Length: 272
Image 1 (cartoon, rainbow, N blue to C red):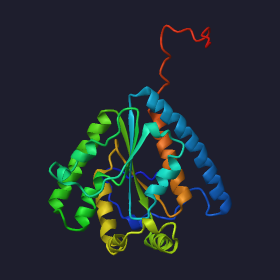
Image 2 (image 1 turned 45 degrees about the vertical axis):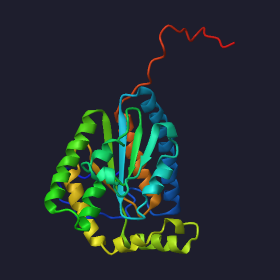
Image 3 (image 1 turned 180 degrees about the vertical axis):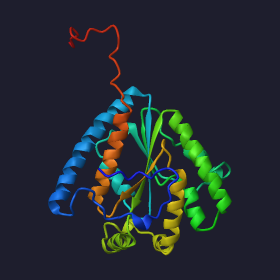
Image 4 (image 1 turned 60 degrees about the horizontal axis):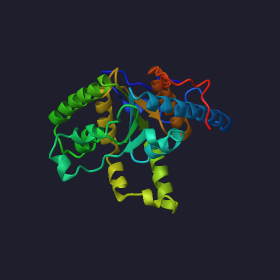
């Protein structure tokens, strides 16, 4: 698997990253089927590792998903996390802050939703909205943006030092691919519920968003909580990349199955 990690301090130009990349797989039906088969194996492995994470109760995993509208955040969760026990996984979406949330610092509401030990937490959009949409729409100054970059890094460092592994994925689609997906939402009655007039207005700001994403990832990708730029035009390859990184992260925790309760002889134990 190619390394899509953003090196800390690197200068990014998203147009240099191929949204249609499929790594070592060719864009054929056979290779697509092969990749999907590997993904299913990884999903099975993910289920086993998540159970060990839950049983161990000493570490946590936070998955951050960011990307333009239609980039596949919901699809990633639906597919990659399909083998996970819901008891050990929680998905959070951060919408427009409430009056109470606005009365606190911008990370206040986020910290409360961070996964507890033994859990996998998924942020479908995240605290990074506060340095993306706010910046693109001119709601905060560049000075405040830089301050928030530092505050986010400190926040994620705190989570990391407390036992949470953080994976941040930018789902990278092309503007043409977004157009096709928006048109599908309009033409397919089963998908029209997903359509929002605001999507078209945000699409007009595509260039501004790309620049904001570039600056954000370059400033906040660290060794402890890296960003990955995931080619997302091909949904099957997107799922494979993310599934592999999530499995790797859980395996690298090197968690062992907790020992059985003491004082019980399981070899002679009988259930009447």
